[in-house]
Amino acid sequence: MAKIISFSYTPFPILDEHTGQIIGELFRPMIPVRLSYAHGVITPEFEALIDSGSDRNLFPLEFGELLGINFKKIKPKIVIGIGGVEIKAYQSKVNIWLNKERYSTDADFSGKQQHPLLGRQGFFDLFKSITLKESEKFTVIEL
Amino acid sequence: MLNQILIPFQNQWVALTRDRKKIVASASNVKQLADKLNKLKNNDAIMMHVLPMKGSYSP
Image (cartoon, rainbow over all chains, first blue to last red; front, side):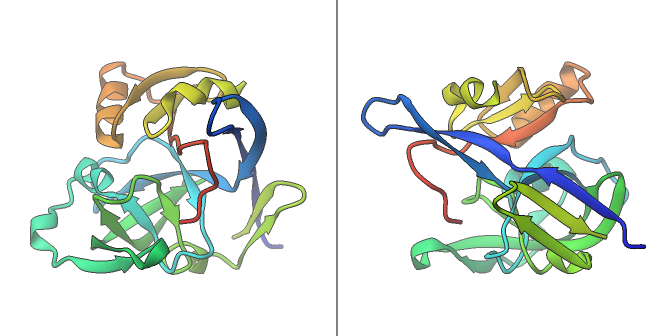
């Protein structure tokens, strides 16, 4: 029987751009994960956004610094974002920890990215399925 | 409530208690935040980057 884990979406306020007052609420499919590199330190748990529109995992560069990844030895690559903006990123093998299980995978790190993104290559492809139940505001991962 | 406690921390990293009701530390980047948590000897907090709230996010 397939093992399933689920996470409720995280709520965030929407603010009026002129008054700064709360005018609504939106929910994002974020899940708690950790990162580690080789046999080194494991990061504290952090919320990352499940992003089916991202080809690959993308994390802020500071995560790599936290993990002790030497970016000077890695040739940078280009990652294209919204509006066709190109940012420089560094690819590295990492471990993603979810629910106390370690998954060896791959991720990109960029100084231009502040929000951790879990993409299709390197996260979605680790599991049988990932379902975003938008009306119920739950992310369901079939391991 | 998570909603409201995050408002002053847009574009920053925060560390939340497990029940996500309280912020225990904040910093401008994740490395600074992790260093703060290490000094506090807090192994239980959850870190989160707080996106701006005046619009939607399309990564």
